Amino acid sequence: MQTVDFSYLPLHSGDVVLDLGCGEGRHVISAYIEADIHAVGVDLSLTDLKAARDKFREFDRPDNTAKSFGLSSADALQLPFADNTFDKVICSEVLEHIPDYRGALVEISRVLKPGGLFCASVPRRWPEKICWAFSDAYHQVLGGHLRIFRSNELREEIENIGFNHYYRHWAHALHAPFWWLKCLFWKTQDSNWFIAQYHRFLVWDLMDKPAFTRGLEKMLNPLVGKSVVMYFRKDAST
Image 1 (cartoon, helix red, strand yellow):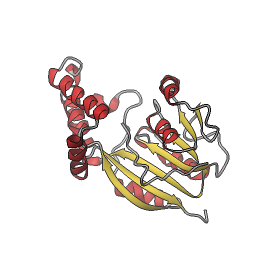
Image 2 (cartoon, one colour):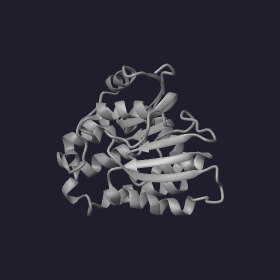
Image 3 (cartoon, helix red, strand yellow):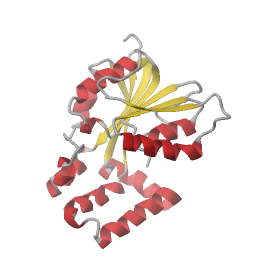
């Protein structure tokens, strides 16, 4: 399930790209597939990194020396990379999990080259508030969401450390009702028939990408998109 739209974060041959908080690899693998780049995924979870490694195997192109792929366990507040290392940085659905998210943003700025592009996505405020209202367990689990962002305030914080915002969109409208249902029936979600059927629908949509549901989600994203996705360019003079 790809949140970042590479139309707004264009990848060029030779780019060095960081996916910070890569999880099981959805964006770092997608970036590797998208162009001849050097893709690096970082996460604290060794379990997720192993899953990302396993998922990557079918997409590996060892004969293409213009591409490379790497995974590393690291803390977002102390990234093991030199200043100005990356051309592009992705941080998707991660900042809401980090206690010192401002420190993570400073690290992103440090490792991103002047003029480089940065994409940040977080849960959209009002759909997320419904999840919190329906279930405390949704966000109080270990590693859960620590805060609900106001996107305009987060945008200003990122701009204030030397970035220029250039595009915003929303994503995953069809997933918002699924999470509302999971939160509403949190204790019985694993046995709830309707949740199971909705999950089957989402998997079908993800795998088959029918034109109707793709068009429907595109139409609904500005209204109920679960994620807000923002794109920035680091000031070239920074």
